Image (cartoon, rainbow, N blue to C red; front, side, top):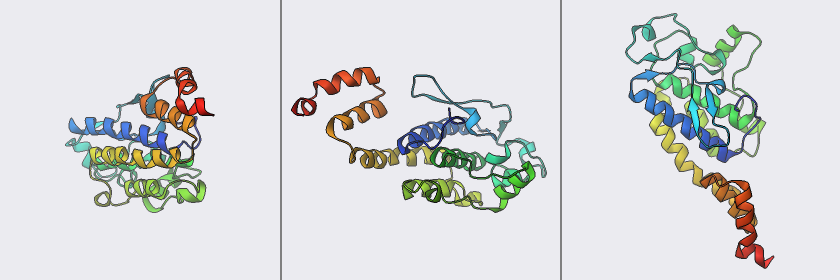
Length: 219
């Protein structure tokens, strides 16, 4: 789904991003580093709200000696962390940078680091700052851009320090996103939005509920 979609609504970015972060928190709690977080490794179950992280083929234990061997590069260039692109020692925060790249693509509709060759992509990951999301999608909230920018810090010490922290930040931001959207909707549409996005009520059931609502009856 993430590979096929263009820019996603902010509420979807937060919902999917939070679940990815929670999945990473669970993996990190067992001392696993995924090393290849990218849209192709994030699956959304058909007709459901559940997100799954797949392909742990490159995952390594946090204390695996191969993670500290200079020149050992593995992963997908467009979504690697800078330290991964340079073959430096990795820890769990490398997955958080990759999560930032996935969130960027969901919000902007395109990857943050693009070039004609894999080597050029790796150079951009290691040295460049992505184009500001608001230059691509001007209506993107600045607070979401700030979350993604912090995940994209070149120095791991400047990023969020755990996937659990990221999950909590994204969960706390859901209310902001909902308030922005709800403020633009008429009462019946507002009810439908809340029922579908927050409680996963099917649209056919929502239609029946909205038709019976007091707000609809007054119109």
